[in-house]
Length: 484
Image 1 (tube, rainbow, N blue to C red):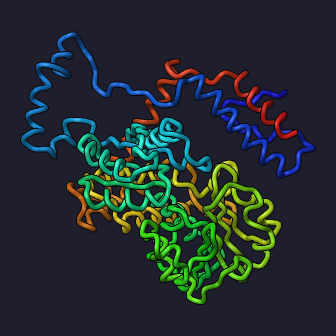
Image 2 (cartoon, helix red, strand yellow; image 1 turned 90 degrees about the horizontal axis):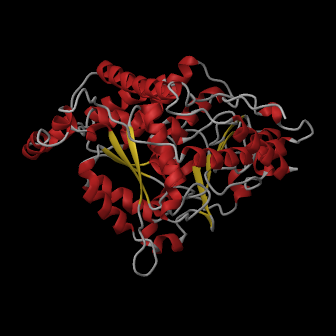
Image 3 (cartoon, helix red, strand yellow; image 1 turned 90 degrees about the vertical axis):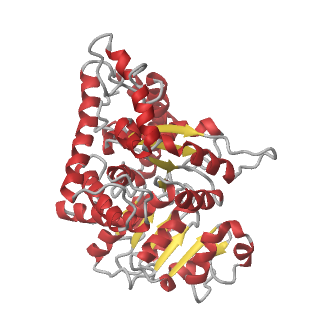
């Protein structure tokens, strides 16, 4: 077998020529899973803690620790806000999860979410210059059921150690209460990336997709497939950004949402879904086949595919249809199949297909912006400001139907996001610290550059080893063998 290069840029070349498009897509999915397992075992995870201050001689220990550090404790005691200057708190985010809905794999037990939470911390540091720490908590009560109050209590008690909290992979309906309570009762930003982060980047992609097809937000008919935390929040944010909810229809596992869904009305835990029942689908359309006919946009955040979204659904959509199929790890329909069915623009949550619409392009910059001005919360306006920043940055460097938003390796997008989010926080009155847009941009740029340089220095010095060639080829062979 030809060797994979370390950047994995020649991945497609190693797949058998006789593989169909679907087989190639399956093989790539399996390859990344096999590689992830081997690489995580090889490195022992992907995050570590390293000092940010020097030790120039023995007596520096007396300044970094006792007796000198006593002055830090008493200074913060007298003014808690100095904790942002005298400790790493101002650039530190806790990634908190109870691991009850990890990607498309469901409840993975509390430690089962660690790989994803470390992944969030990894991206925060490398893309946003933000330090993150993964914390997976057990939210089960004595009856074995997951209790949102346990997560709420944990975050409220630990908030004084962090500049912000990133909630992740908490199943619904608990996720709604956890976020809404903590946003109001904590004195630092609490951000639910599965919900708000996905909504932000989806809006960014939708804004640019609509520009390319020459349609206006207020005019388009939108169908949402899936009514979990992601899609429920996407619908809310898209409506705030100008969509007409009366032209939208959302589906959950039991059918279309509308005012007649007594099961949702009666279950107070699903209050976010009930809010959407009251403002969407006024004709109470019941079937996907009817709802999607002549729809301009499909946003699917449901269960992993393929074949969850049917080709015939897409074929019945309006001209120049926009299709977002973002289930992980496998989209509800593969992009090539959606294109064959007539979709004009297709986006997924994956980076190995065109148009990755994934929260990874949002949260590093959003959290960085909030931290720069020591925000007390992240408002909906701040999320929309981030979406508009992503869309503008992407449009400025050029967009087309196969490239509607910036990618993770376009690091400047995160500095623009951070600066715009910081300015919106000041405008919304939730910032503790004032700065100009340029000051926010420069600080974000410097911190991101420092994180990338530090990582490169560790690689170049051998402190972070290069992945073994054998590991890459074994993962590829295992994937090919599984598909054959």
